[in-house]
Length: 236
View 1 (tube, rainbow, N blue to C red):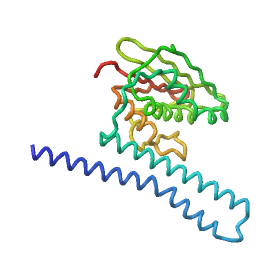
View 2 (cartoon, rainbow, N blue to C red; view 1 turned 90 degrees about the vertical axis):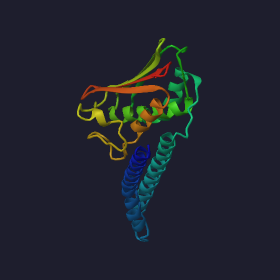
View 3 (spheres, rainbow, N blue to C red; view 1 turned 180 degrees about the vertical axis):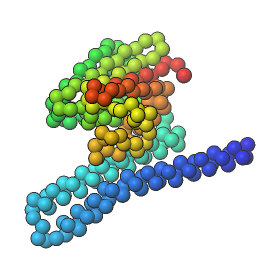
């Protein structure tokens, strides 16, 4: 027992070391970029246009760091088991509306359509706020990888075994070789944007699995991607 406990502690130390290394790597790039731009801003002869541009870029990087730190704190709470997900009866239609709210402007800018199909009576036992966080991260991925004028479909249904939510886009798709890794923390695929830190889908999976759920993905390059979420009514 002591040997096994020692082995587990060693694994925890390794995970912590790797996590700190990942966080350091993710923060290094924006911090370096902001340091350079701050130095340039100190030049009194810098043109107004450049000053405005650098100020905007620093603001973007600060927002990125804030989001990263917030996500990592959520991860640490989930990993430590300090988060107790609620078991409320959540209306899926309300969950979808709440998740779509922060995505409406990005979708409007790209002139993307969203189609919703499901019964208002569809529910599952879970945590509305945390599940909204998961769905938002999936929608972000769909919006990012779907071209202007594209379409995102959200359907949901309930049966005696589980409640299912399916989110489908007609975007770039994910290469078959990358599919096993997309839920891995800090993993960035070939089609990921420069601003991506590869943490959104990993966080979504942690939230879903923490509520007796599963999340699977199907994708075909050039045709789109489908995320299938299931919340089971009994422990699986």
